[in-house]
Length: 161
Image (cartoon, rainbow, N blue to C red; front, side):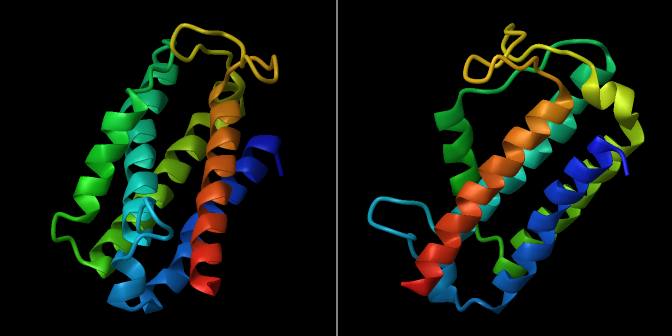
């Protein structure tokens, strides 16, 4: 299996992991995971909205040979949290997360290894300031895997306590 295929496969695992969240009661689903933090519902909406951004903006930009632009994080995240509180049911939100992640993974597979590895920019920057690695869609997906893991750990920790 190609490196891109392995990375996409790992990225897909968050949708599989999220299946267990269907069994949560409303209190666990809607309560903040800690004082001043988001709820599990808000976290899942946050992940959903980032996936949708990659589908709507990042993948098309790379396909056109353009750089990737990310929105201002705080307003973007606030909109995602508001979506979680908009009246959408737990099942609907989890279904939407799963289907959106699956759609994103299909798009990434369809792009092929060369497009996934094609160098790009994010916010006009060609290299990650932390690692020095050149940006590519594959690099961005790896970053989103780390992002998933961060939120997965938050959710698991909240459910244990």
